[in-house]
Image (cartoon, rainbow, N blue to C red):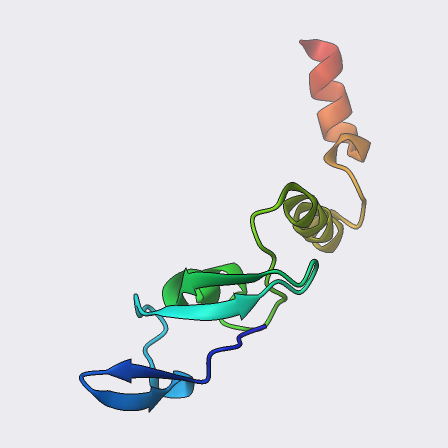
Length: 94
């Protein structure tokens, strides 16, 4: 969740909505999983949240694992990639 609402740019206050998506300005962001507040580049925030359409996860191990599980579930409909038959077959071959 984006906390910063305005930033200073060229001695003017600018709304976050007016910033370009690839801006290198740092903004305060709250992790949607653990609640930790971090300062990240606006560009990194947009890449991580798919232009603010998904939740933001920080770099803690628990948060990364939760994001990974969510992405795998969304893409394949399972909780772990080792549940895929293709992966099991590749392991048996090698």
